[in-house]
Image (tube, protein in one colour):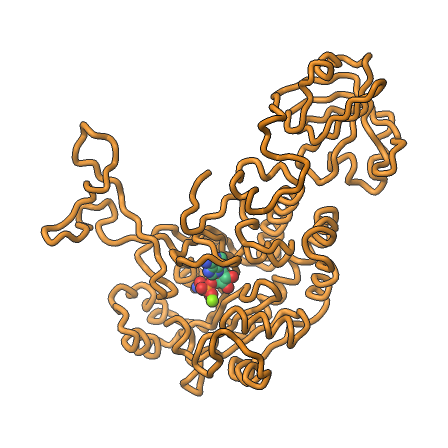
Length: 475
Ligand code: 4AD
Ligand code: MG
């Protein structure tokens, strides 16, 4: 349908041609002399209006009531100009085949508008709605544009592991992984009591497939650094996991992250890359997902197209963490969480800065206190801050977190000791600083937050097909 109706003439160039449409019925209106069937095949928001008279093959299916909302059908016909105001063309049906019926009394998607929450409970059917099909197509376009941007700029895509022993962010938010060892071959059902334990009741990792604690990755960065320190510019793009028990509109337990890593680069190069990347992918969806973006502009977030056009055209505000704290203190606004140099910024502070102070422009805050940031960030000359940057956007808050990495072996070792981290387990990471160390920097962007930002969808659970949050792993 997109191929036919998505062109400059909205399908008029197809008039007179034969066409086969396969899709799902949105509505079927039977009138005395003619029946109108709206079919959608998911390629775009537009339905194909199909007009059927009793002489067409398969009309008995209309008479028997088999063409109902949700049914899958095949329609053959000829494209003709439409009398209706809503479309330029329609399909005059010559043959109709019902492929899969759909009981209209139990089909969960009804004409009456339902809440997003309800649709989360039918995550297997929600892609058949306008909102979720549009979000899915834009998500796809953002993924495509991501690869296009990095590939065009000479970055190599690297797969980072999903199972790992290291905790990149040091926040203790990992899921741990164990294998199902079945000692008892007669009982093939895995039973929690069969996790091998030592005499003192702890998990016996020596009997586990991995031989030591293994976790789901929270970030592919450390692995990405090893490849940047060999191939120069690389990026990862894959699923990451955080066992944080937060029920917010911007946190998932499983989310996709894009993590570029640039060799021979400092924090300024990193911020320039983040800016160019964000502008590129936003421009891409504005140009390539016009119909879906118009839909969001009307139904999800009024004015989103103008807002995104500004993102593409205007440069981003940059300020230091210290200046951000000053600005928040001077604002005299009552925040829920305290504002003080040394404390992390909360989402309410981040949103205040982008939405109220800078009128909706993305803002990059840099040079955070080292105490609130991860061990690998490069210490600044003031010895109090590190070369870190967060990119904040309206509504979502933190979209990107990045930094220049500590490439000096002595500084990094000292920091690991200060934080009481086990130096031995980072032996390979330290090797990068022993053999041909280079200044390097990178960032991580939460892909679902990007989808939120680009579509206006309020809750991150609606930015991914099957959201994983505490207590939800159905489907
Ligand atoms: O700021 P974070 O924790 O940074 C890192 O993981 C670095 N290792 C990245 C790097 O430098 N290569 O996470 C990066 C981004 C955040 O800015 C946010 O967009 C997203 O990942 N993110 C989440 N998205 C959804 N749900 C969660 N629970 C998220 N936690 C982080
Ligand atoms: Mg962060």
